[in-house]
Length: 448
Image (cartoon, rainbow, N blue to C red; front, side, top):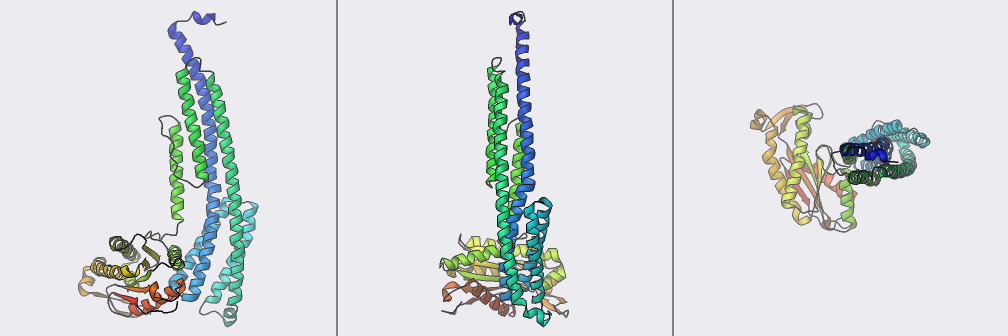
């Protein structure tokens, strides 16, 4: 049957055998690449649509809960900074909800739309009732509206949780299908390669091993992404699978970036925000760990911002964040926390015995370095002329820093709200004092 083969020259036999290997290999690799391309398209869809929708549902839920916390804090503290932070959270919620609607047009999203619309209307009604110039009848209905908003928030949080669970099931099913497709593609590729084994075992084994490694790496990488582990690094090679490895690496980088952007970190200083600071304060109270809570605020910052502009004001905020971190690294403890709770307000959590040296170090470095943000003229004069919040022109001294400290061992039954309120009252007293100051409440056995 193969007598014609014996008449061929050696070089022709080699050429024929390698041609057969090439044909079978090309068919196998082409089939595998077609499957990989389909999987990559499917994964990109999962990342761009399904994963993103699940992430948005999680972020919307956390945003609603954060609005609830901020609303309660604002009702107690009546702080303009908290109002600004709450409004920012509401804008973020609306933007995230719009993006989710664009991504998903399922029945679940339609059901969510009704709850979101009701929640937004109740939220607007509560905000209107809380306005200073709100009509008396509107203000009188505030408790009813707040209760209605709380109920709408609870329903929305539950529905968002259910939506995210449904998205997770959809993603799991898609990942299972991808895994099955990967296994099927692997089996077919191996079957095609088997035809070339008799002509060139080393070549066939090399191709099979390459496809096997790539397929298994794809399955493992897909499963890791499904589990939320975005540190995906496939084995690099010099063939077409290197393209897939780079795509997975880039996809993992983008997912890590998306995850980082969703954290409760201040975008300017990258320090923990209001929620993270509150959680740490609550943890220390719950675990009865002695601590000192320092409220750090800049004096005359608004006047500086008005004179030098928004960007220079941001530079000062970033400088204060770096200063606090450096001081804590040099003289604090590993468990100390530096948080940026908005605007020019910072918080420092340390131990009672360390807080005063840390505060003194902050004041010393701040007073020494803050002058570099002023012009030569203002620096030489030690002040500048600007308008206050009432539009009256007057002379402002250079910025100073005020630090109000409450230690847990001086409070009988400490609560987070009580400590924050006491620090705020102390801060107002400090801001009326000239220069940079630290005030530590040393009264013993007080209530919360």
